[in-house]
Image (cartoon, rainbow, N blue to C red; front, side, top):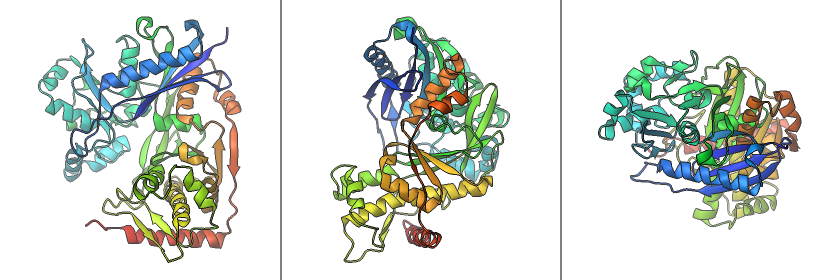
Length: 496
């Protein structure tokens, strides 16, 4: 009987489920959006029940679309939006508050206080993270302090906490497993990435009871079995991994120095640094890339705040394109950007600049500049920012990069990928399957059950769609990048 992997991709705005066969072909896909809540400026919440119900419904829909019998499901894999956190009653399963989403900034003052109290370096050394509202720890603290009675119930062992992977596994297994994996744990600001344990000093610093936190396991392991009464079938839940790490694995970045960049709303870049964590001099994040067979591998992570969001801005705010694909058509209609450079610092600049007061600029405008030049400059701006990040990674790690693997919606632009290769002077590899996040979760679930025998077998089924080789001469490359750096200088410290 033919078997299949059911991979769940629980994202920030939607839940997806994909059925894969042994050749990593998508047999069925189901997706459902769910509501976002913005109770105050800068606050972002989800209803935990919406997360679960949407994920359960698309899981059942994908199984139905694929026309699978229950015993054809080899395993279930889970990948999830990271840092979003939920607290719930251990007995009733009822959430005590909405999920606080990774984007939420309500705890920025807590993070600032940790820095002003001189705890930033302690946190960075233990977790690889910089104190920020982005991470789960301060979100848990906020719920404990602001929802009446929850701290007392937590201290009495009545409350469980976890990221979205933990919540889904607990619910899908019929309340039988309270677990997470190393990658999600490493994003909480509570987990020591060297000792691979919840850190008592950090828990004390944030006043979080250890008893509410899940057990931490490998990213590829059998944690529990789905409850037939809930899911309609019984199968092992055999992978849990944060979305960006899942994409790294889905891109078959198994070796030290392998790098992937996901071109989404922003751009997330991860470099596999092997068995040793790399301390970043550029304030990149040091994080856990994977936990397998009782061992972990580490990664450097950098984020470009505005990637595909820049294209959306051209469409929705400027109105110079009607669809995202129009940007490619217009950009291809001109030989270059005619000297126009966009620095999309709409929310400040990340690594290596770290200027939260920077703001977006368009420089180099002349009377001859038109919307096609602006579209081309937008695509180039995304590639320039990725170069900024990759240069930091090369310097931090001391590793020369042979190639960059790409995924995400915006990587379909051949023009942008060619410019990316040119400005990096590095080959860019785009796979046939650019949905590498959910594929990574499937691979890990299949490895845990023996569906795939090894990483070597996975490499054989990972297929390339296109390779973009650099063909820009060195002088042009240097001149173009220096222009970008000059433009960045003009965007800095604007909003002071």
